[in-house]
Image (cartoon, rainbow, N blue to C red):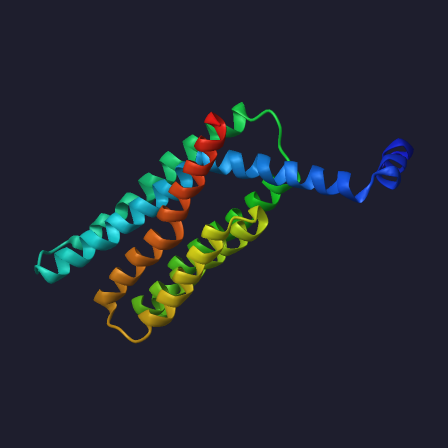
Length: 201
């Protein structure tokens, strides 16, 4: 609940000042995500690697290629430890940080539900919904941060989800790899590069 002083501050604040505060919050969150770009880049490369390895093993008739996906739980552990350490060292948390956090928590929950129950409808349906989830998470995050490459990148995830409907299960693996490269890896590196250039400007 706001105090009297906070209410007076809100009432007396000019629109320009409000916009400056909002922009500062967005830039803080954007810089944090860029500096952390670890999550976008790490998961982008890990999923792409697994999809391509699985695809190659199928094409070469090598048995057991699907076991490469067991790297996902390991990736979750690495990502969780990294996030925990980053959270402990974070001194300031803005509302934008919270919004983005909720987006990705919702993504993770949806991901687990899709993986757990998706197989009841076949692997092809599971891959389709995974790409939709990839696109949703990056689209909303890009919108919150007003970072166009993430928004545009997310559209490729949606597009490849549609394409995957018309190809076989094996070729869906290529769709997943392409979706991650264009919606996670490239925007992630662009965001990190922009942040680093601003730091040295």
